[in-house]
Amino acid sequence: MKIVGLTGGIGSGKTTVAQMFGQLGIPVYNADDEAKGLMKRSKVIRRKLIDLFGEKAYLDNDLNRPYLAERIFNDKSLLEQMNAIVHPKVGTHFRRWANKQISPYVIKEAAILFESGSYKDCDLIITVRAPLELRINRVISRDNTSRARVNSILKNQWDDNRREALSHFVINNEKLENTREQVERIHRKILEKIS
Image (cartoon, rainbow, N blue to C red; front, side, top):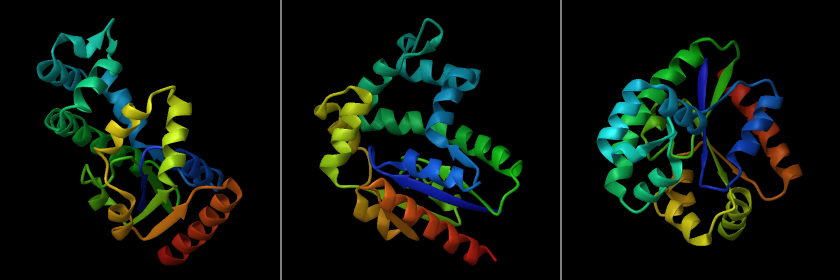
C-alpha cells in the first residue's frame, strides 16, 4: 500500500481536500488531530510536555492548548522540542493505523509534513494551496482568532513554493467545484502510478 502525504499551509483547505479523498473511498489519517489526541492520552508525552513547559501544560487534566500555543509560536526552540516529543509517537501511531487499511493507498494529512520530516515516509505528496489573504481570512473566521495569531503560525510553516518544489501534485483550492475536479484527476493518476 502506498502512502500519499497531503499538506499545505494553514487555511489552505487540507481537511476539505482530505474529505474529498475520503468520499472516493481512500482512508485518511489526520496527523494534527491524532497528535492532539496523543498529547492528551499518552502518559509519556504528558510527562515530557510537563518537563518542558511546566505544570501549566495541562489544565484540569486536559491539554492547555492556549498556553502551549502562546509559548511555542513565540519561541521556535520550544516548538522544535515539542515536535521532537510528539511527532515520533504520531509516526508510530500512523504506521499501526496504515497497516490495518485495505486500499491501494492512504492519505496522511499533516500541516507540517515537510517541517517534521515525515514526508520522507511518503511515496507521493500533494500540496494544497490557496491565496494567502484567503487563507488568513479562512483561519480568522474558522478559529475566531486574530490576524497576528495567524501570522505567528505562518512564520513557523514553509511557504507554498518550498512545499511545491518537493510535491508530486498541487491542488489550487479556491473554488470547491474546481478543487473536487483536481482531487478526482489526481486520484486517477495515483491509481495509474500504483498499477
